[in-house]
Image 1 (spheres, rainbow, N blue to C red):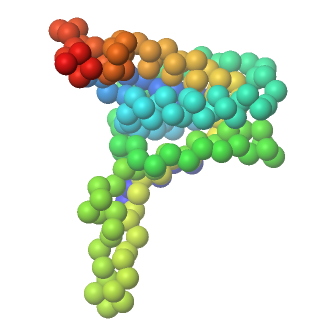
Image 2 (image 1 turned 90 degrees about the horizontal axis):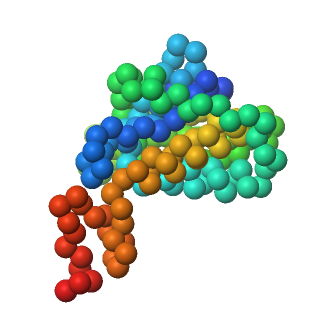
Image 3 (image 1 turned 180 degrees about the vertical axis):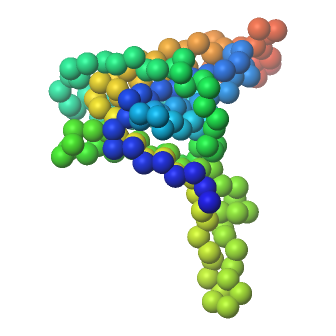
Length: 174
């Protein structure tokens, strides 16, 4: 059975990165009361979530509060799964932004095993996290995610690729 978490309200929703630029590992963390979940992800996924949340927030009234992201407490959680598909939305009735995270399933497992009797593929049991965040929590997530992503290796001015501390073999400087 894969991990399944559903939070109608969260106390915190944050992203963190552990390690040195160039070899950092990124995580998304959610906490509701005593229940916590951590999902391993890519830097681009953190940036994409922040970009989408920011677009939705631009069409809504400004948030009344911007809570702290709670990154220090989140570092102690064990990861539930590695992030694959992401679903994002807005629930007008509750004035909350929906963040849905699903487990990455390798391609050979994603097809599922064929049932010998029916020949139909069996569905894959994916880890799943669904949470709703306030406009303030979403805004705080976006600000922190921007700082986290920008703290990585600087981009090359010619090719846009990351520059390592040891240098950068730029393909455009042939």
